[in-house]
Image 1: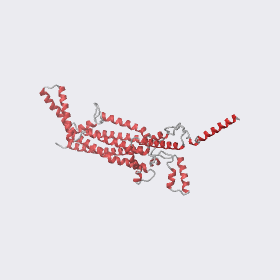
Image 2 (image 1 turned 180 degrees about the vertical axis):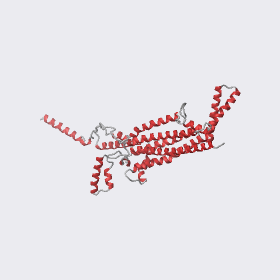
Image 3 (image 1 turned 60 degrees about the vertical axis):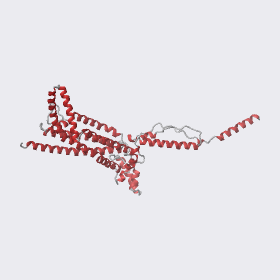
Image 4 (image 1 turned 90 degrees about the horizontal axis):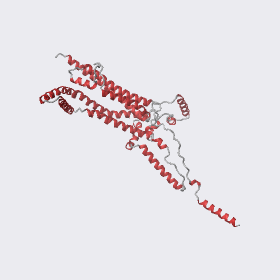
Length: 420
């Protein structure tokens, strides 16, 4: 009897302790970390999506009540949202106010059709190049023309006169040949600096000016479009690349489904919304077709070859029509086409520095292809639009330069043929 009473007391105490424990629903479930994440098809501009998709921490079981667990979840959600926003900004927070402007650019321009956002980016690239970079290019050409037409003729004459004057003074002073060379070079440098100040034709601003304007504008526009591609609510994610088209089987399936929906009373807007992008790459994804990156690389290479051809053609015109007694033509020919010994007079070559720059630009054109492969489609469209603008601009300027040089050569020949 005594042992039975002790057993009853022990059972009662166990039940009392069990009634004080919280229910099973109060314990949060353990979230196991993901072993792998789904591969993303977006480019380097939106590569943070893969980082944000992975879990940042794992939860551990706790014995706190459900109210405390809910507060902890809310705090962790807010912290994760803040971290996501910081990663998405990527150091370009000052460009964020302009993101809605780019996203709504197609609506602002009242563009319609299957590719309104791509067309708006094309127009934006042409507008930026016309307003910002074209005036700088024309200013550079004016500086270069002033250097060629005003400074170089006087400089060529001084190069022949100053050494003679310095030689006379050196002989009177009894100076050595090394001292004569040093004094001649010093006076030539001083006269050249004086000529450049006189005509306001320093070559350094003309060389650095376009780069100091074009490169920052290009980088800012690239960063801005990157921010637009990172925006989760961007309408760019609803538009496929203009050069992408579905396979014939997929197009036939969507056509049959569209006919069925139209028969059931759906309007065109609803059908287009249900159809979506048909699984194609959008403006925020990488170009899986490789059409955009390859076109961009070939377009950059075409611009490089066009500039090289333009320099060679102008140099050939000047070499054919130049006279050894004409200082201006001889100096321009030396700048544009330095001929090595034994070279033919009718086939001028580019200077060594120009050849080095041209080869470097060719290598860069090929290197741009893998870079564009990792970029979102909206950046590829902007780069293509800018390259098309550059090709048109260089073509027009090359034709203008060639006609101007031919007219100048014709006038020079007429003056030489006149009886003296």
